[in-house]
Image (cartoon, rainbow, N blue to C red; front, side):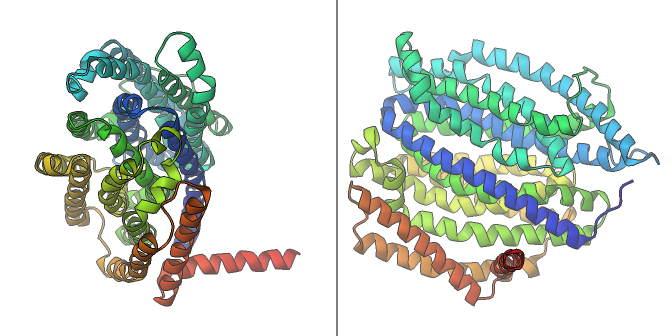
Length: 551
């Protein structure tokens, strides 16, 4: 068995993986922001209402398959196979060299690929064939608008095969995470946004020439992006020798173990899909543009969510899996504490900035073309949802670290139980708030249900890994104090500075203010001696000294 690196080395490797993932995700989110800007400027809200409603289903399945049910099953099983040469913790570990463990993993990957293809191919075909009834389930009759319903069902029939590409990529993602190879994982998601950016120029004219709705070009862009993300993993997998021919062998230990772990995960998928269906139906029943306004706010919140949530959890997940697998609860608790402190340090000030500075940020991202024609009302609609979704950025940052810990412990049942509780909270809140608050009420319901999810995950995590309250609580309190001046200065800037005009200068001033507010937070965090900012400054200083030494 390979030697286990000391905790300090593991921490450095986790930080390096997390930094690389953060850089790659930042690139992807910047491209995603440009994508949303281009979509909002190119298409009417009637077209984007239909597209976004249809896109939520394959995109939600992608999140749950590539980042949820599949990845949370693949990474622990693949890591265990690579570490021990076995597919399950309870099986005897062979005494052979690490190379034999590599061969055992290659054999497991071949069987898992075969099983995943046996599921994904028919699922994709069924999604295309039953796009119309699925659309009716999702959106009802779109307030009796037959043209809107037809457009949404057409979009769904084009978009559903996207899950084939992302479900197939999930196997490769699990392998690369098990080896700690994150370069391809960091930058592959950006390819989806590249394809979306090409769509209005390369695909939309073709769709119009063929007599299809112009927004069909966006669906083609999504399919191209899914294929590119899958292909981007191939070079790294080939270098590892992890591109075996798929073999359908449902009796293989790895396939059986993943099926056991995925059982609750798939139930979680079903629960989440009820959530998606209900939120879609609620949004589709609201006045014209509600789906688009909600989605535009969600995309703004997604920019920091992807960078802060996934990069931290995925960066530490391999080491967390190894610590839990080795039965070292103390080391696992230290890793979890580090993850939660980083989540607090990064997500809370961003949530505060989005909530208090949204009136200036939304025009920077969306204030062009077709969206600009909506005037101040369009900005106000997006901001009304963004204020509630911004709180969800911080809550999800903590939730993701806890669910990663449950995954490392190969406990998929508890998160599913919590998801069911979360769904009940969402339904109750959404039905109560949708009427008086519109699409902002749906956003508030999502945030409230995420808070419920966080509370239950935190209460029950100690059965798997001790939750380091004494380490995390002081950091959270300090971060809240450091974020207070950001909130105050944001409101002053929105009220007193010329940030709301249509020209270039107001947008440039808004960006400069956002950078300044970030600097204020870092200075406050340094004065409060928050450990995370000290570590960042120390790392920067070491690199600067190295460069001077080699100059």
